[in-house]
Each structure stands twice: as structure tokens, then as C-alpha cells.
Image 1 (cartoon, rainbow, N blue to C red):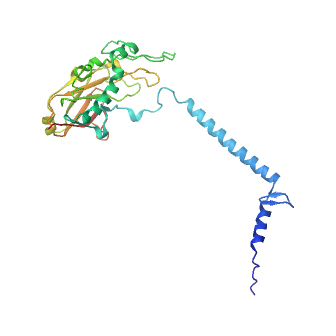
Image 2: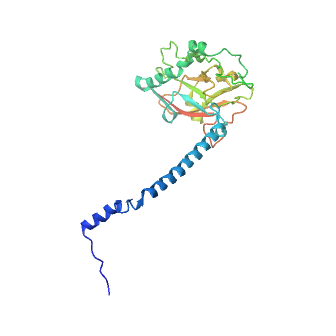
Image 3: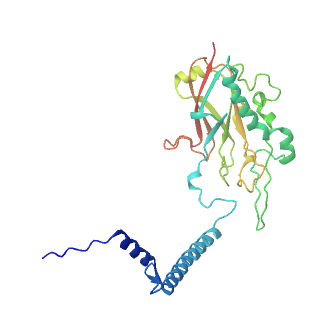
Length: 290
């Protein structure tokens, strides 16, 4: 025999819900007395307070092992890479000589990039260093901060300095300057106490033919040892990276040329096929003329 359950009316359901939320006879709120709710809240307060304290203690202990000035792990930055300026998407330097807007953006970027290299600013902030040797500034048990930096004057860039240059770094005449810089690696002694320089060439035979002649500033693309080591952004406040400027004199017009520049240094490998930017940079150069 099946016993049918009595169907409750809407009013009865509402009353049961009201009684569940607050039962005036037992003084229970949602099925629990005030004392029961107090114990539950106290438990979770202690539990989450303990988790917060444990997390804070762990973070504090970890931060005691981290320096504010030097990264703890630098294994992925063992070999510095090279980059170019002006900075463009996909490392493409495209110049349309007859279209001012096509190269004016490059000129504006270079003006801003080279401003800290002005001779007056360098003389005010940085030291005249002895060439051919590292500019070491050890702490010797006492924090030596901030570190001094060596001057790299804009005039060292010769025809690519942009100072009083009506050709706008050569972009208005189809003889553009491209600047090569080496990425910063803290406490890295580039060159292993030997001279180093940057060289550029076309990636393939046809690129070499279309690239034509070029000149480099400083001469031979030299990078002096005195700009190393780099001690980090917080220590080396006024550090300015050494640059190499490449002025391309007669690139074959209306042809895309693949260029690769490398740093020649005893302790910088440039043949790692897994890292295309280790000690080198490749970019595309195109000079459009009508």
C-alpha cells in the first residue's frame, strides 16, 4: 500500500523557511545556536590567522635571502644578447626616402634614446675612466653605493651622433644609422680582459652584395672594457651602455637586406642555434627610393 505524502501549501513552505532562518522557540539561527556559531567563527578565525601568519613568516624568511640589488639566479642571462635602435616591430628598419613620415618616427626614437648620451649630461653625472681596463668598484665589506659609471659621450658616435646633422642620422638621404647595444648582465666581465668589437655582415651572399659599404662608430665597432662590470639598476644609477653605430652608405635600394651583427668577445658565444639573440642580432634593412 502506497502512502501518499501530503503536499504542503506555499504558505507552509514559507513558514518552514522562516523557522529555519530564525527559530524563536529554540533561539537558533539557521539551525545553530549563538554559542555554536561563535565556536565555528572562532575556529575559522584561528585557522585562517594561523595560515596567514605561516605565509607571512615564509615570505619574510625568503626575502631575507634576496638582495635588493642583485638577482639571486642569473643562469638564463649567462650570455648577453644584442639589440638594435631604433626599436621596431620584428626588427625591420624600413626607410622610404621620399616619405618623411616613414623615417621621422625612427629619428624621434633615436633623439630620445641618445639624449642621456649628450656630452654635457655625461660630464655632469659620470667619470672619465681609463680605457682598456675594467672599472671595478668592490664593496670591501662596506656598501659602496651608488656605483660610478664611465662616460660614453654622444660625440663618440661620429657621423651617427645626430648633433647638428641635417640628414637626420642619414635617414633623409637613404644612408641610415642603426645602433647596436649589448644587453646588461649584472657582474659580467665582458671580453674576459681582452679587447672586443662588433662586426656586421649580410646573412647570405646576396645580402652581402646588396648591403654595400658601411662605417662603424667608434672605429671598428670597438667596445671598451671600462664599461664593465655592470652592478645593477639600483647600484649603477647613471650607467649608460656603450653603443656601436653602423652607418650604411650604399644599400641597394628597393631590396630587403638581411643583416646580422655579432659581438666578438672571448667569453661570449655567438653560435648557439637555440638562442638567436645570444651575442648577436639579426634585422632587416630596406631603403625604398623612387
